[in-house]
Length: 243
Length: 246
Image (cartoon, rainbow over all chains, first blue to last red; front, side, top):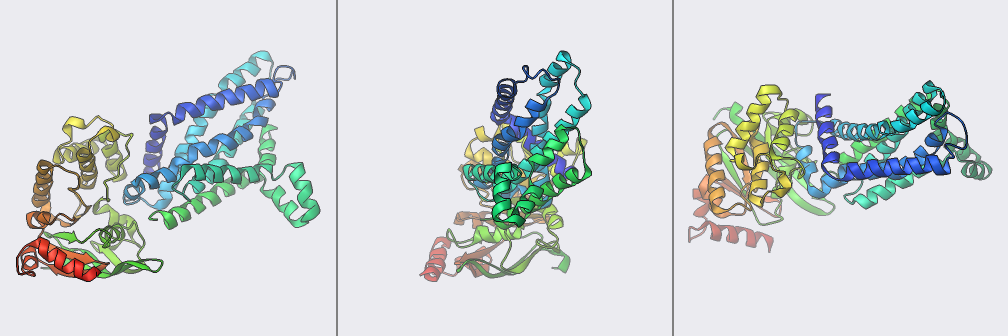
């Protein structure tokens, strides 16, 4: 546990030592603000909730989260520091978890910085803050899911651009899997696949959280999702560390 | 020499990349008080052997043990007794020298005052005082190498595996590192790889010459120099490795 935290702290400090952190947070806030206020009709709707904010968030994360994770392993391999890290007395699982945790804490910091939205709706009306809290929990879980995909893809290659593109592509598949267009098409052509994609889709689960529903099966879904990709990450690191 | 003093054991270590055999059935052991110079032309398999010894690369066949801990099956325990300087001495560039060493010390289980002591010890040993607060990426090649060395020596490990520890250092720094290795020799088993032959005379008690993945010679530096009529290590090296690779 201590080792995981030590690695996570170093990794988190590395985000803030480079412009990555600032650029990410600024772009994230600008993008979320623009989408919520302009495309989401935040004011015209006349409702005191954060639905416009939550509706756009997974798509913004889809694009930005792989940018946080792309360097996690690819950079270590390119610079050779992976040889240093993995010859310290830690297990590979600890290294994988530490890096994932750092990225997750970083996303949590970015989410915390969206607090003006919460203040705004509370000034303008009386929203159900329980639903908002549940929505934020959903955001954190979506971030975790995308991060776990991104971290695993970063272990596939030493090229950060490839890691980014692979991660966006895979996250996109999980994001659109429950989209009616995709789903209707699949249900008509391959019925079995239609059912399957609905079950593995991320957005529907996330939407439950934004409606204030925290269901155990959704929590289990995210835990399994993240667990699977972290396991895949460990296997990939083990396989490819010395290539 | 007693059994307990054998700190590094390598048995039949082999690494293949597809059809290419990088390391071919390498076996040797190193006892406390020995400094083994690992010699060979570039691409002979020195770094690959050291990576397997550090548990970083998975061997195709064979075993390596550090103080009896198998590097594959009991990796964390094996790496705890190991100080490893990877090829090129990679370090996290954005961290300060102290920050980087503190990270390594924390991973090695130190905390509080003891952690600060270990970092001060490593910085003193490798003469990094003047740059301790600088980011590693701003340092010269020689300093970077010493940061890597400081990281390997931080926990005063019984086993040291150093891949080209003096590469890129100026003659004075080379001298200091060699003096350091000589000073640490009595309580440690040390393997250093090098292609600078004068290093063998300067620090090694034993030389292992490897060519095309196989051990060609395992002898003392004195024995090695007698393998060619001229008595020069350089000629021995050429004689043994050129013949092998042709």
